[in-house]
Length: 270
Image (cartoon, rainbow, N blue to C red):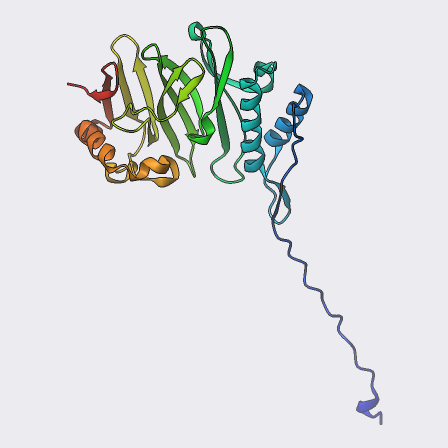
């Protein structure tokens, strides 16, 4: 009879655990000095075509977009000659004032969708071109420009938010020759208002700004304080309370509100 102790023991192979990669982010170097149109086109294409890949090395799209928008603004202000209509997306314009808003952008890699970096461009009284990087304050696609006074302009824009909602933005900027004031207090002490899921309309003849919600509204006790979109103005309780008083009744009753431009600021409609 065979001795069991002498039988060959089967050895089970040791399974290797699959290597779990971590998501890493790669920054792209942008050469110092002037960039050719071809170079800018290449960088912008990399940015626009990028899609997030989990557990892989990804382009740091936000870093590239921030640096590219800054460089393009510097080139414009240095009177470098580029065909901006070909390089960037032209989102809005006001022909008579030679005022335009361009943008670049990238996919968010999540539920927000596309993230837009707006750049405003204008000409002064002697024809020199100037620019300001609006994406430092607001990231959205501006669709309309309305002239309020000789120096004040109302910008209306929208941007997808997290999930199914979207941001609704009105922003007043002051432009005097080669300077843009991005903190003009058009809405009490705030330069812009950000609501969600609604549309703005400005009537140039009556100077009335209308906002109408197209789905559930946000609580006014919170909407002015969201730091992620209001930034430093999220702590501006004085403006928040005064704007709330101006629009509260109509906002909750009709899911809409109206404000009138009085030549300097937007005030309650009497």
